[in-house]
Image (cartoon, rainbow, N blue to C red; front, side, top):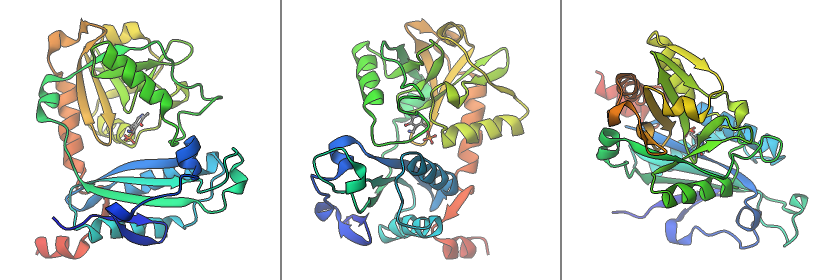
Length: 301
Ligand code: PMP
């Protein structure tokens, strides 16, 4: 295995040398934004959407990303190429940068930009066959007027704490409600339920990240003629759903078979879940930015 190269604010450094200041406000305060992205056979899936979300998160917290979007896209493509990767998980981080020990972000003069690309450690196949168990947790999703869930910020304590709670309850994932008791999302994934053939997912303003996978699944559901509604629902609706599944960059489309010890669809993976996962896997190698366009051309000749 050759060494892994990390992009760090203008240069590529070896993994062991990729370090940031202990005064970086990303480290001290979770002050920054990030993205988790995937490449499939050299295609960076929905890279434009990820970059748009990154820039919107940065805009929301008044963090100036020091590159034009097109240049950032090229940096990400180059990081994949430099590490000779085809199937990869990519982590993009823009932190406020080093300041002093006070909170004031205006004293942090230079944001830090990090791109890490790693060969993908896939979720175990059994998870897709057996499904996940969810537990609803006492901690609520951050309110949009406190720390907006639509900002993918480095402050993930809300998500980490519910993950802990769900593990303590003997489940794999946390079902997060918002402060009014409506279902918001899970610790790192969006949620969908299916009832009598109709697919439901909560509107993002209830307290969810606008997931790129979520949006891709909404498109695929529409293209495949399913009725899909972005509509508020409660825990009761999840307990009594015919199918439940989660979506996220790492997880793709992952079935849920148990929620608060209530079995969903007798513990069987539902047909619509299976169909949408298959459809999703069909588009992931084409809908995005190709890192090795020359290679693809010679492949089709
Ligand atoms: N919700 C949260 C809180 C997340 O962190 C993520 C990303 N892992 C998602 C939903 C899913 O978003 P995406 O499909 O863009 O990965």
